[in-house]
Image 1 (cartoon, rainbow, N blue to C red):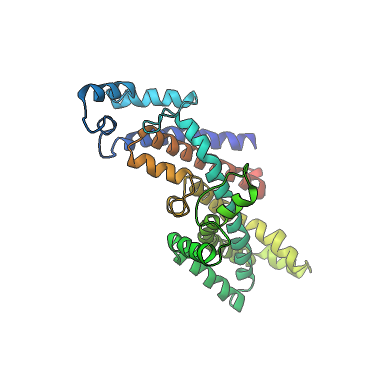
Image 2: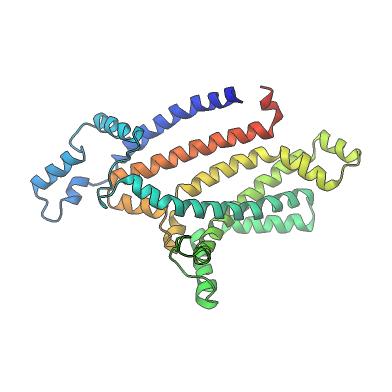
Length: 314
């Protein structure tokens, strides 16, 4: 297993370096000039020159990248030009919010998507299959922003059960925190559940036609044991892949959903930083997102290793 992980790390590290270069280079293509935007309405040349010098905006692009990369390796993601706060502090402040939202959304997606996919595959061509496919099509077709608005109207305006927007830290009130997060989590989890259901169904259908499944049934193994032990475990590889990718996307920030429900997560932080040309914050958030994707893919590879015996013999 150590050799397996070493090979994956040998790929992950250069990938992260290349991603950081692309992030830094593309950042410079944002329209407008940061120093001019921060200099105020008067745009005093001395103030602009001071800002350029302070944030190394007067240096060549390769030099700025090296300075930024050195800071990242030392745990310094730079300083937010707009908020005058270390980017690392902003990430530490927003990450728990987005992490909770992503975990809740992923849990909802797994609870709904995987059982529906298994049921649809086992009951192929029957009523349950058509119902599950209809629900999945609904989940794929409904835009997140529309579903979010409809849920606010129904559960907040009409019934008054849940708050329409805002965020309450769990340290203040766990109940109020869950009330505030359940709707945005369901909106995000609904779409992922639909995709998860389709992938699970396709993987299960392929496994159900395998010779070892027919052999297990011929030996009299209980149907539930065949489905859970033999089928679902062997169909788990594409589910793990999809789960890692979707979870990484959730951690990168669900912009529309966070805006609708006023959730102060990564998505809102990114939007505000782009509009204010806050280069350091955008770079910090994106490099954290890229690192998250790489780590999640590495975890998915480890899961493949544990699930698939063929990899353990490689």
